[in-house]
Image (tube, rainbow, N blue to C red; front, side, top):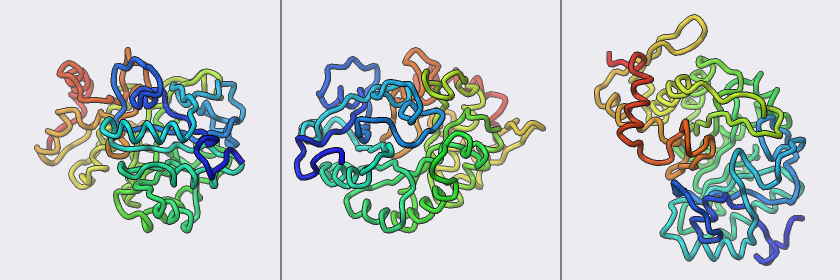
Length: 332
């Protein structure tokens, strides 16, 4: 048992350093403020799972306070709840990230129950049974996410030992029935060894299941099994951001793709001028995920290159992005 759920003084939770700064829990200088408060379950030890890319993985040598390239200091739940109430005008959503440890389900019930309900709550979690999914909905969770992370089963099996590929699909399907369309998400990390065609196939599959996708760029973290790997190619990532945006917006019938022989996107052909206009103003290149999720610098250093923009793009940034894609995106 991690903490005494009958009182908030002994119950601990990790808070992303940017969120802690926004809530006044720490004095933090930030280039961009988070629009969501990001929390992570606390156990005092590494996750029982051993995902090859994750700093929290059982065999990683990373500092326990890290997830991706971000630090997550520990606070009591009492202090957190007080700050959430005091600074409620500063943020739009609360997101709970979950590691796996003995007693985690009881911990999560206690955490979600204690969070103020004046802002919507997202929960990113391991596969749950349908009854458990309904429980978190009843406790006040607004959006639930089961992060597959990999575009193909073969890659998933290599990098995410523990829960099965099928268990995530079962959970996603059950969640759509329990939460409804637009309230169920998964995550996809680009740069784990897949082709662009694999990513698009995955995105279309999720779209058919009525599941939305938050897109991440693989971030090598020293001390993990994949710590010496490289981030994805930026041009490739930009193309996939466009496809993910179009599918998440319900524009699946308004574009088509031409492929090269290596399974990479040659052209994205857009059917309507208004849809093309949304791409041109830079919407697909902002952080994708739940409403008001901007995850500042989760995937990249503030100095760039920025895979996911945590704010509106400047005119120069928009020009640079569109220059990269100038020969790829066309109106037909």
